[in-house]
Image (cartoon, rainbow, N blue to C red; front, side):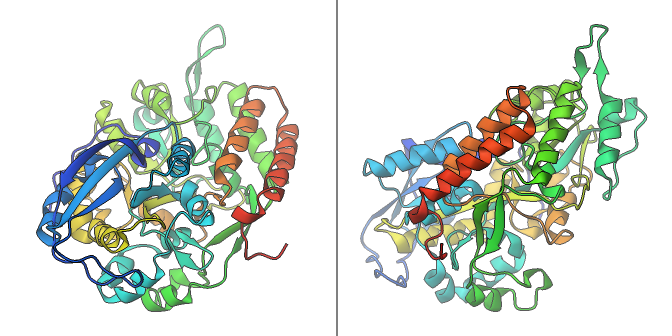
Length: 483
């Protein structure tokens, strides 16, 4: 059915908030919860209050269906913000240390293994196995790459609600003004560089007035897409055993699920891998030559401003940028999106996210009921109808022409094609030590970008720091891996 979609400027970082201290309580709804796989169920007459990390305004459409189904349920929404996932996760960890426990948190890829690795998140395996019939439709609609990214050491910890792959947004006006055709799906790094330099415009004093390309210093996006397409990564890539219970149940006949296992393992640092050094040298060159502006930490609000003012030609972003650009005044057709250019390969990076259940929650059954309704087709349609395309839905069926009818981009199919047509696409590296890892990554990226260190030196020092971090974190890294 047709949905009325509202759009507003909201970065991926802002959307994937963790909950915090300001709260709005909304009385919601339902019948008695079914028996939990472990821990039992609460009597139907008992009032249950769930503390859920979320934006109350975005969750409001779920109030009626929840109330209709669970009349004994109240939901207290908690909201806390940060410059990125890492800052928000730090605040959540501080809350937990202070004894403030919530029932459902929201984690993106950056924090999934962080919470699971510290036993703060509850594995969902027993719930999923018990309700397999009810969940079959959900898994059929969600790409296995997203599911695998929400697993840790053989168990599933989240049902993905959204994802964003680092595709390439481009300003169609600047392309047209420069006489450049829209990039094709198989365009290369050299094609990209030629386009970026042609779009770049400089004043008489040599300062850049229009940048061909721009990015921000963080884990997702950043210069990480260039690492991926150049065949590199910050850590070695491996997969945990297990997961057959899920793949055989829900993805038995799906070719894209072949060789899926129990979740990613990023075990051995390889920050100074030659592929990474080459990628960093490339983005440093873009800034030195004035093709890209100086980088900044966190979200991409400044880049969005450049883009809206026709001073930026291209930037890596996911579905979340469509609504943001529209809200900033970009009319449909004034921007579009394409796959990230090919270098040694065209492997994309993505981040996904969803609610996780705190292991210390005393309301696990009701928390699971909340998650199931929120990720149901009805729940997601209500959520996106209210919030707009502020991020890319995890459900393939929700990526359609109607969803982008008001805003564009014209080639919205690229968002899910990134998964469907590039099965090697993978999540950003996010081991249980992702918080301090990211701080080190952005720190040394900044030193390379401002000229304090050469790319090789910056990544050599980053490598030493990551090796030391892994060495002092054996209990929260991968405890099942033999050292």
